Length: 114
Image (cartoon, rainbow, N blue to C red; front, top):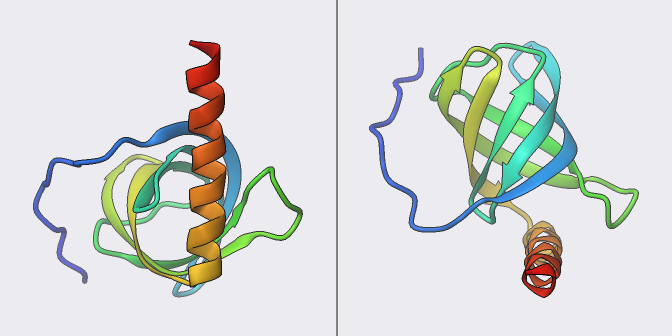
């Protein structure tokens, strides 16, 4: 069984979002809603229980395009019921660019409305 990693304080901010995400690990497929997102990770309210240290493959649906962003490897950092936080370990450069562009546009919209 994977060992949970120790608690580390984030040095970056996650942006509040509502996006659909599918996550796969071992013998299951889960569906969830991303509650917040950064280049390095996200918080999800899912429909399938995971455990800290689990490795997942993720398909993230961003509202900017129809095709999802493929994330080849994430690690579950913490779990509270069906809510969990995950760290991105491996994503394609195109996926990284797309997530960064999406987050940048959300930040610009937020700053413009303030």
